[in-house]
Amino acid sequence: MTDRAARDPFAARRRYVTPLLALAAIGAAVVSLGMGAVTIPFGDVLAVLGDHAGLAVTEPEFTADAVVWNIRVPRVLMGAVVGAGLAVTGAVLQGMYRNPLADPQLLAIGPGAALGGVLGSLAGQTQGAIGGGIAAGVLAGLLMRRLGRTASLEPSRFILVGVALGAAVSAWVGFVVFSGDATRVPPIEFWLLGSLSGSTWRALGTAAVVIAIGVAWLLAAARPLDLMALGEAEARHLGVDVELLTAALMMAVGAVVGASVGAVGVIGFVGLLVPHVVRRLSGPAHRPLLTASAFGGALLVVAADLLARTVVSPIEIPVGLVTAAVGGPFFIWLIRRAGYA
Amino acid sequence: MTVAAAEQVRYEVDGAVLVDDVDFAVTAGELVAVIGPNGAGKTTLVRLLAGDQEPTAGRVTIDGRPAGGYPPEALARRRAVLSQQLLRDVPFTCRAVVAMGRFPHRLDPANSAAQDAAEVAAALARTDMAEFADRTFATLSGGEQTLVALARVLAQDAPLLLLDEPTTALDVHHEELVMRVVKELAAAGRAVVAVLHDLNTAAAYADRLVLMAGGRVRAAGTPREVLEEALLSEVYGQAVRVVDHPFRDCPLVLVVD
Image (cartoon, rainbow over all chains, first blue to last red; front, side, top):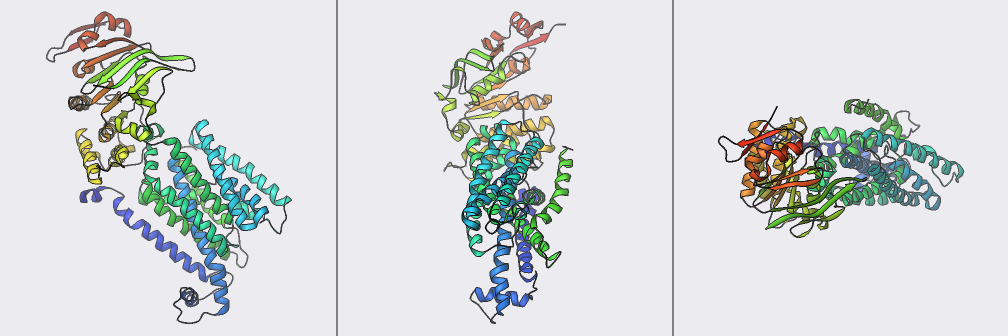
């Protein structure tokens, strides 16, 4: 099998792509901890982290501790967790539908989760928003699965249906926001463009558990997902229960997207950008693709959030603006390359 | 021993009867070729036998049980299917595509990664595709893709093989190669059903022929029994003559101008 490694074009690259992306994500996270409205020197960041890890060398300064540990660490970890979830779900949708344009936001799962999140926030603030996001995300995922079965599967059409549905659902998010109690419901730009600024340890805990379980679930389905590349008919011939697989995948995708949207709102294009870049390095097999995409997604959202809060500092812009600024042109490039233009 | 059978099978969709009153059986160790003009219902018969579709009336069985009654993985261990229409833009390497044929065996305790790799390598070698193992499937020609798909079917290691036009788009060398491989598999005890367009390929390799027309079986038997001038001329709407093959022990069908 040694000669196989030498000849498989992706075998060599696969070995370093995940560790490299993981390192880059950690690097971006550490840089992010020091930067923002208040700049905290690198040494102080390390002192805070060391203190909470129980290996304090020097007692950290009080404000540094408050800013880094209570605000920035949960925020950066939230970005990493949400980014990982969005990138993995994008890769799964692209594989499941054999559609390079598939993405949880473009297929209306994100906007659907936002509607559930805004309704949930009326009932129970952040935890309610996450719960509502998960429920609505799963529902939206299963609805899109049904539409995908009945509608012609012509890829660009399916995406158009998703975009149109997403726009309509986003309008409902707006209705609820503007008719709701502004002290309890996050503003419209939070839902439609995303923000990591309110991330608390508690919200992080809930979102991280759901996203970790969902991603593990999706990773477990990596091999049958590979077979979907041959088309549904062939996957069936090879023993894949296509109905069961797609339903199970959509439920996990819906839960992951729902938890992230409930926690931080809709951050677009992560699920589109990351898997396409990662696929060039890892190859098409879903196990390495999903693993590397998780780290790639974490890197992208952490970096985008860093930009969002430093580019016009001290004012923060929604993180979704940053990902859209990169993702929009990338989407057009993808469409042109796929020959749908 | 009958591996797969259709009894009094009828299949209709949107009021169109694609297959009607079909009795068909294939036993272990034989190669049955399904022949007939376009639209005769050959592909529909294969899909019914594969369990892809439920018959409107009648019964399709594999190993004595209804084909539609098996869980997907159990069915995939019993029958492998080579479809006529393959998706061309598969981004995986040929080796990875062939390895997908091992999917239904992944939970078998007697199976191992080493065995998977050996089966995949053997299947690629058998279809003359070993040198393409690390090429991306999407970059292959139509004929090469058919051969890799056949290798995937071989790697699936099922006792029943359903091949819908396995030789279409192949050059003479590969057509003969595929038919020899298929014949060997039958000789080794598998039940093979192949839809073939070339009557002379069917005559040379098949143990039995089933001639279909208009969704029904018009004739079934040995090549000499089925390849009969008047019947073929009528069914295909094309005058033919049938002579003895000059050096193979089978009939030879010649088109008459």
